[in-house]
Image (cartoon, rainbow, N blue to C red; front, top):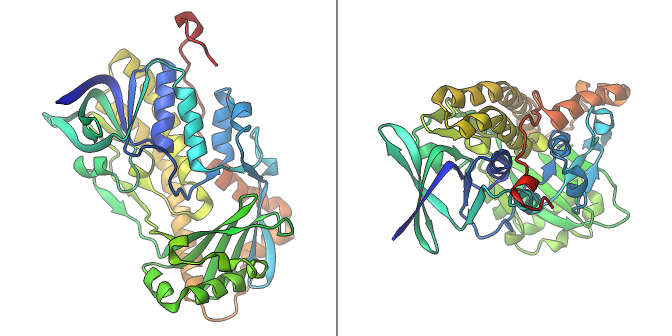
Length: 415
């Protein structure tokens, strides 16, 4: 037997984009079903940065104080080393936001928080272990999805399907949406190494000939990203784990007494970096947002926050239409028009850094000198506000413009 559900909006994927747009629409009174293929959110997420733009959205929703009670670390400055030269790159303390810092929080904690808030609204429905398997297409219109779950098959019939199922999106593939591959010269090897109280407090980036290491301060451990040339992970493994650990210790000497914590290659995971975007984000009855619409480079850690900005714009533009039952194709296109420039601008910046900086560093075998731009940041501290603005807020930060249903009038507790 196939369970059939009728709803106003079905969201494929329970990541940051999917959960946030589901929450915002249900908060308005739109009936929403979110399908998430996993049983929980406890997976090896790598994007744990919550930027000031996202924290500002939490403030606008009246949730900031409660959100910041969750365990997190606050990063007010970004620092780096090029060879033996040190420089502060970004200073978030002057941003025109309520939170003048990046928050580092495991993505599962962030998603659990959003789900808790969304479940206060009776029109929010979340189905875990429900994996979307195909789109329901009738007369060239996407009319819903089919999914599988431990309880059997499921069909969701809906006015609007939102694809938020990540960079390997089945939804966008089945919809036949054209993907523009922008290329990436690198992959990233991620690992955890313990942190001692005597370690530097800053989130750090180390750049030296042929090698790049980024360290995120997670209080009791360092979340480390070792950048490698595209497709070279197997060559790194062939050199042996001891040689790999020595490279990390060479870039960050204070980790030398701890790199032995990496006892097996299972302790190191590889992120295949992809940078792409859809030529069209939508077709009749379907809209893709977040990584499903535009996979970002890890540079700046902006992927989660762009996805959340997409979600806010989607709710702002489509929420009132969905409430009236009048969501049309041109309304879906309005979301892409709204979000195209900030996506294009950020990807262009990332690709410029990839091609003009990272590619050269990874291919370098000589001594690196501090680039002119970093020399200027070191000499004129006020300039550090520019990268902080770009990373922390993006090129077009979104603001919550939707209202919420009155839970008290419905006899539902709001806390």
